[in-house]
Length: 201
Image (tube, rainbow, N blue to C red; front, side, top):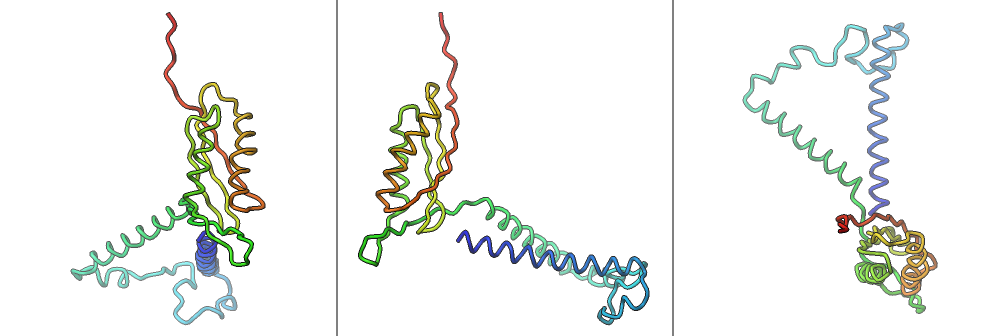
């Protein structure tokens, strides 16, 4: 899913870039009023061949405005375009959650481990560490190359270095071994738990 989204983004951005670059270059050639030899490759009726040319004439811009269907169609088309752009934008920030992990069972076929089950175990083991108040763990990546993204809320007395050391040496090691993985990269974010100041009398 992640690779498909990345490929689609590259193709879409590449097409948009080519169209904008090509159109801008042709408009620039017309605006500079270069000799006629520069315009030989332009299609017949190309609107931007001289500095005073416009994309749409006044007649072309206003020929449908008197029709009752014109403005509803324009507004609907623009609304659909905006919704598609918003969907595409939100898709960039949405992180794909790994549904299952492919485990080498030794028989050549492999087995599948549910991603949520491993997330639950990792969360429970992480929250059991001294100094960790809460933990949110999510698996991303591919079935054969999972990655861990975790956010840890640390208690006021926590030692971040000690927490990360135990997380790497205990929780992550258990998860990696149980899934039969050679490596299990992780991105850990730490934040402190907000608490009310204590009043001393």
